[in-house]
Length: 519
Image (cartoon, rainbow, N blue to C red):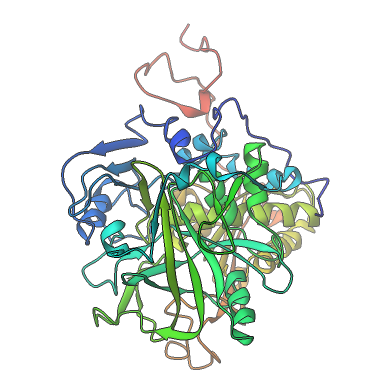
């Protein structure tokens, strides 16, 4: 594994996060804080109602307003199901992600970037050390029906089917033996049948294609209810994690301890030993299914750009062979276009970009933010520190490095380091007062993007050759170096406000002794 000596050196504190190695120990960090966790025993229907409730509680992101960023929520009474709860929104707040990883909101991307240099390979444990195999349900047993066993939610009444929205697929390249993990949308199609949507080029899709070419199924496991470090680590993409790189070792680096795997019960693959729920099975060769075959809605589910994705007419089929769970398991899910997707996709993107730009020009880029309005994928705000005239060009070069680092990134906004990348009003101020459209907007046409953006298709722009091809744009909202004095912000007297407002919280003063400005 290559390393970058000048990469950010921020580290997380394992003691601050306790001994977190699964979802339950992670929740123990936040369960007494109503800002980050609430639960209810009020019955809820997983069919659209659960997501409809959480839309108001904490979905955020690109969800239709009204919505907000709020606490994670556990529903303990699921209509039609016994002895299982559903938890949503665990990662739907950047501050909560940071707390669960033992760091702060500003540093979480640097901590994840540094985990690459401290990566730890997963280890295999015996079945008696794997809580996820406490209960085993075999598809060969009479009466097995995954639809009655697990409450897969629908997000809206128009969803193609019930979906597992936060299931981590684990598969192995049939030619090289390298394993990989990725998150995909998984629709429940029958008592032992699932369909899986793979974005083009994703690693397990490549594994599936290799197996299919020789007429063989690909054994996989779907792992749900996981340590947040595993989910975040799994969302890195090439070139940061090239083909053959097992992202589980990033989670090991974050926790300073190897992720534990266990041999699956019915297929030749491994599962996450401390998951809440695992679905075992095989991706069948040359079998396809229409995603909305049971509903005919024409829609799949709400995707991260905020739109209902179209139901796919032809998706690979997974035949379920077993379900294993903990006792009293929690099914973890998310609301498709919510803030949780922003953090899952966006924070690893930030970490990847930070590593790349630091290698290209050490110390120049100060912070990056994968903005929630882009679902964590399409929009990046980048702050830079200019010290010389040539830095006007280096700023734009840094934006090009970011676009090359993450293929699905569509727009980059450049700002100076006196602008808070996490404050949209501050970013818009920079775009309003430090940018001219005719000189500071750079468009790069005809570049690979993402198929779920409805503007990236020939129907929107006939010049585009295919769906998932886009123009990429750099918005340079930095002050030109020769005008830096004219574009200096008004400077206020620095005063510790706490003596005048003792009931308010000022995070910028956390850890700083009370000043004597009131004297």
